[in-house]
Length: 346
Image (cartoon, rainbow, N blue to C red; front, top):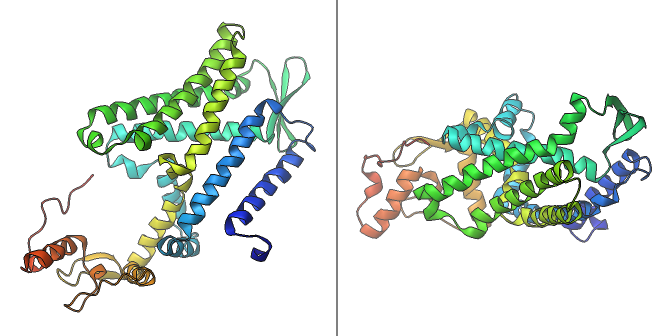
């Protein structure tokens, strides 16, 4: 299979685009229900997939990442995987420890984006659409099959019409919370950059506001200015899709791999823990310590110390104190004093 393609990127793009076309062929009943008004979103999505695979393959080919993915796949069916997946991908439990404000902000942005994607992409590729067989009744068609028939003025129809409006409101609230924090929090202000930290938020804000503006125009202005606003909204979505794999928003499609990392730490931590060669505290699993040493060796980075141990065999506090000792000449790493923030939480 690999010999048929020039690279992993070419193979990934061919398989993915072919899969989308095959699904769309059956879902749209042989392309008889394709909304050409959504053509721009379709092209933007294909470009996004190209950028995503380029970024993911370049990142995944690195020795540490390749090792994590390989072992993570083997541990995918651990009993704790469903719970870990829920905490990392649904409830964002890992952010709760940073404060309820940041947790609420991430939940609003994260689930607002997820909801919009679950609605937008099926509509763009024709996996879901609506038909009206008789006056006042809609038929929901999913993957080419009639799922249900609903009243056009019923609750399900109302939720379907406004799903993107609800997601836009969630994203706007979350983005405003994030912007407020970045303008007021001193640590965030010291570390942030416009292109990396603010631009993604402005793009999400632009998409959400222009999306709500379309609804406002259609409901209250009887469609006046709809064409111009729809183009502005479409361009904002396409630009964001193209930018997404290369900026801060790339952590959204990459986030599922955090489940691999959690499983890796827990599984090998239960088997055997590595003791620091200086203080004797257990800090990582033996497997992870050995993997770090192996990866450094692959990259021709040797950290064998004259005392007979590898730098990766020291816990982080002792490692920092050892580096100080190399400059001061005094064995600071052997002094049994904890750092001020060694056990800090948050």
